[in-house]
Length: 199
Image 1 (tube, one colour):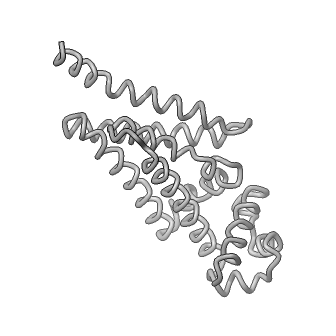
Image 2 (cartoon, rainbow, N blue to C red):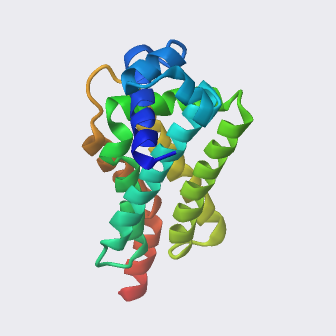
Image 3 (tube, helix red, strand yellow):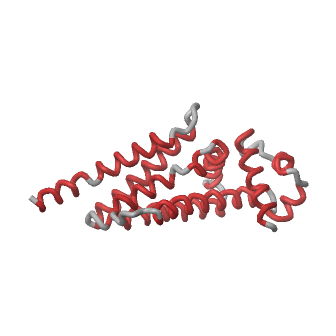
């Protein structure tokens, strides 16, 4: 399938979910949004579930690219800088706009019942945890690093969920700030140890 048409259908899926929710986002509605026949969706994606999976793969790729771009742009190779880039990427515009946020929520709910979506969710969770864990291990003992990674991953997910469900617009800047403050608290003991070592 040509990339332009594929992107058109993914955008239409997100628009339909944003408009009426996943349950009411029928193949016919999505097709109307995209200006194509419903048969094209069934032919290329095998139906609504296949289209939701393709849409989530697209959003997850955007997330991965957002984090990678921020990490590539770093002039500081410190663990804190990399963790900060991971936080920034997780609240990138591609992840917090209305259509993306509502599609994420639909994906999370559906992943509990659909194995293909559950696998995508598992891979995404493991990637975030592994990236955070690697950076924390550069500063903390192994067990502490793992707990710090779990805690910050949960904080990012929680802030994202609260932001997505808020009646007002998603305040990504506030979410980034709170996640960074939480990271600072996780590393406060490490900072004190460093200060003691150098005095």
